[in-house]
Amino acid sequence: MSIKISLVVAAVAVLASATTAESVEINDLVIAAPIGSPQGEAGLKAVRAFYEFWNSGDESLLKQAIAANFTDHTLPPGRPQGPEGPAFASRQFRGAVPDLKVVVEKMIVAGSYVTVHMKFTGHFTGKLGQTQGHGQEIDFIATDLVKVEDGKIADNWHIEDNLTLLKQMGVAHLDP
Image (cartoon, rainbow, N blue to C red; front, side, top):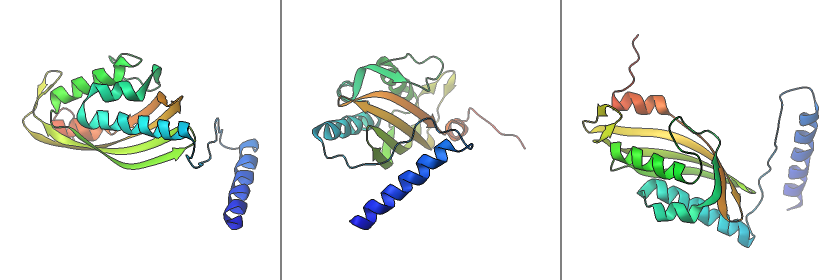
């Protein structure tokens, strides 16, 4: 136990000194810690509900998961900000891929921040914009960073492998 504590203290000291050196800018340093508290457990429950919402499309799960002041910090064009944003995105995407499934491949909890790496699968049988699907297989990844406050997700930063998705849908073509 004392070896682990010593290693953590040493790592914190090295990281802290690195942030004061003239090198890469680090705006916020988060060091992982155990959940333990009731608030941490409530936050993890909210995160699980959020990804079950993405897996099922059940908007009652979304209401359990996100705060009234929810902010999407990587808001795509056309998506509303706030709690309606994820619901809107899910309805749009499920219109194109009705059998959408999401598997959380990795979840890292670090205090009030949770990083989630997922895999989306399904078949493009619906319509996306002007493009009608023909049953193409969909299989792409995405990663979120969410911040939990008072047992709800308050902030989200996300990145999706949209190039793979659009290629699979037949929307994007890369010519040699």
